[in-house]
Image (tube, rainbow, N blue to C red; front, side, top):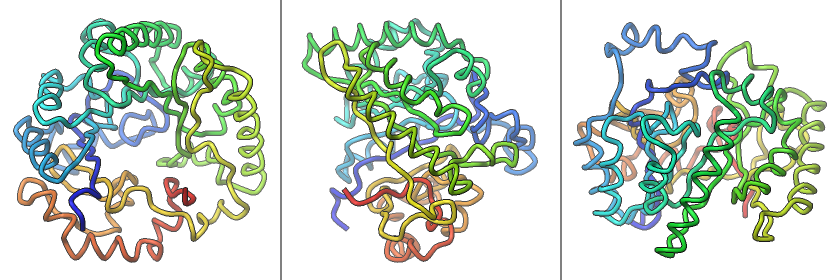
Amino acid sequence: MSKHELWRITIDTNPEDCNLSCTMCEEHSPYSDFIPNLYKTTGVKRRRMPFEWIERIFQEAKELGVKEIIPSTMGEPLLYKGFERIFELSQKTGIKINLTTNGTFPKKSVAEWAMLIAPNTTDIKISWNGATKETAQKVMLKIDFEQCIENVKTFLKVRDYVYKESGWFCRVTFQLTFMQNNMHELADIIKLAAKLGVDRVKGHHLWAHFDEIQPLSFRQSAASIRQWNQYVEAAWKARDTYLKPNGEPVLLENIIPLKEGEDKEVPSDYSCPFLNKELWVSATGKLSPCCAPDNLRQSLGDFGNFGTQTLLDTIESQTYQNLVNNYKNRTLCQSCNMRKPAD
């Protein structure tokens, strides 16, 4: 494997730390019993990645030619104690941050966070699940939707200032979860993004971790697939109709029609966007090839632990290479929400 094929690492810095309770979240959903049973199942009360590991990950990633590091997509990464030091590592190694956040910007003002984030980040993905307060707050429990809109406005002002002063552009993205109880507002989310000046709207179909949310998947039936495809058509019309203040359209990503039969499995010619390109390191060091739910991902094999091996050890292992060569034969991969049509 070429050292340049691996371009991004995701590290689960602090998965238990979150100030919201999103209904679809594997750990923080009100339907989840993961955190109450954490000690019983793992032997630890709270998982937080040691900063020494983060330093080592940045160094190994630099040696492998990695371009981006994502600090946690589980929990709220800005709640990690000493998160500011991650930006220092970014500056030291030249590896940019790709940040996913719930948009609440805890512990500092939005402007203070923006002055740290914008110069060091390729893309800030803000979780966004509605165009109205009613819908957003039903999905992302405890969120103040109107305050989050103000937060986005403030962040964009600082981002534009940083771009003007330094020439570095941090893209701002609305990150969606496609569900039947919020995507009726998809076109209006794009309209809102354009009005605010948000650069991109992207998302993925629901991983239904709990029986209670299983009916919200668009991969339920032929009828739900048709409904999703209607929303997609309206979304692209909205993109062409509503432009950002600079006259450019909002970029749309992963907002594509589902094919007939995708309620059973994804088309065989759809490819994995992660293998040989990205790796995940959990707060306890577990190494993984993708972002599938942990209980399902275990079926793909044991890829080792960062406490006892390197990132290079993982991608060169027989277990990993067997998955690269045979993933389309794996049951989990055959129904994976993240596989994509070839570009």
